[in-house]
Length: 158
Image (cartoon, rainbow, N blue to C red; front, side):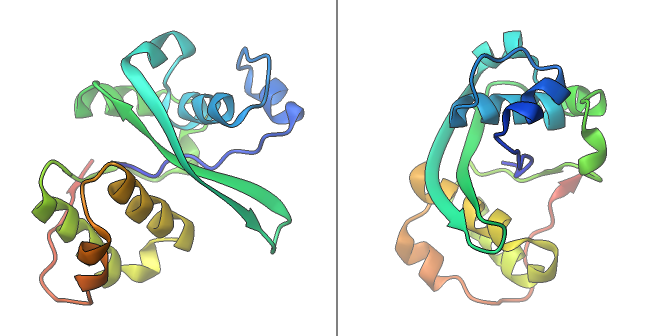
């Protein structure tokens, strides 16, 4: 699981990216973001699924926001390799990988977000929690039950 992409939807954003898209629909914008910031080429999206789950309006910047996730069959190594050559790789210092196969792994991730709250943007926290709920990896009761506890798990860094 990774929060990698925050993209604009103006047509000038698509032209500047060199991404061959014919519309700026939310799913197309998400795919362009996966290309620019993670290095996923359009022809490689066949191994991935974009799942948009939330829509918001940011009153501070007067802009709409879509939240979701990209599910992929690619390995951590394959994702890392694509990111290393991504056009906008500079927008992220590193990739953090969290396993989310089990409920306990997801709870550990929530605890890490609480313990390291100053390193997680509100948008990343919202998107991560909402994604785990939409993927049915956690219940709302799990989210409510998690509070600030010491000893959270540490992610694998690359």
